[in-house]
Length: 93
Image (cartoon, rainbow, N blue to C red; front, side):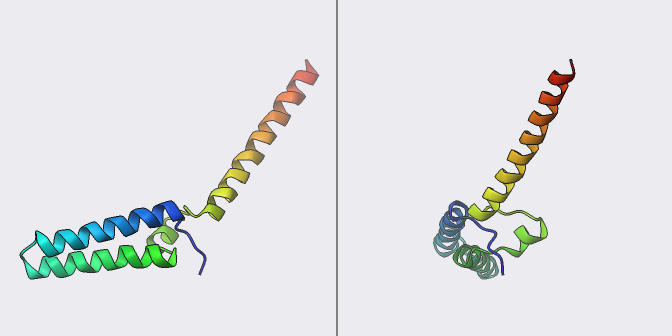
């Protein structure tokens, strides 16, 4: 299983999960809603802990450092190709 959740996003998921649990425990009075919120918080915490989110995989979203480096390399190669085209245009003038 390839990691697709970065450290920053994992931290946000953990904090959001904790806040949802606190909200469910101290504010919500309806048991069904409490169970729903607890499930949502568990999913957020679980995906943060294992650094993998199936929804991110479906959307082909990768916020992990490795995924960010790959996207930066693609951006660099694109800008290098564009720079090469500009150089060849200058030489033909």
